[in-house]
Structures are given as structure tokens and as C-alpha cells.
Length: 128
Image (tube, rainbow, N blue to C red):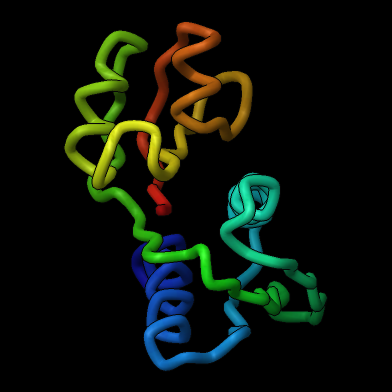
């Protein structure tokens, strides 16, 4: 597995397209848990449950009907605070519709928080 974030988002997309209401992804990581917490807060998933085991853990994710797609951004490009709108136009279908996740020195934040705080970071993923 080269990119665990891409693999996990691909698993969620495949489960959503097949009509499943939940999926199990592995391995679990702090980055993924932070991303899932933000996605849950914004209403794209219903809930998630962390299942620990010896090999790194699993996460059971309950998908709802508000999730259209979620994908990891490769390569993880560093962007400045002023360039966030440019990447919103590139990855989101409309301005104000969906989220882009950035890894910053303040932790994992969304594009709206990054614009409000006027900070840049590395692009991680998007969801709408």
C-alpha cells in the first residue's frame, strides 16, 4: 500500500457507489481520525467507530446520503494562503460546496478555516 489515505477514500467511494451504508477501512491513523472528525462535523458521514487490534486497527464508517465523493489529492502540494480559492475552483464543483483539507502547523483544517486564519499548508484531500 503506497498511499493509505487514497486507499481509504477509494474504499469509501466504492462502498457508496455500491449502495452500502457502512464500510470498514484499515489501517487506522491519527490523520485519518482527524479527517473523519471534520467530515462528521460537517455532515458528510453519520458516525465512525475505531476498532483497535494488534495490526493497526480498523475504522467502521457509516456513510450518509450527503456524501457525493471524497478523494485524496496527489501529489500533496504546499499552497499559500492566497492560493486557496484557486484550488477550490480546481477540486470542488462550486465555490462554497464541499471541503478541501489542509495539513498546517495548526493541525488538519478545512479550506474555510484556512481562509479565515490566513494560513497555507499542504493539500490532503477533498470531499463534497
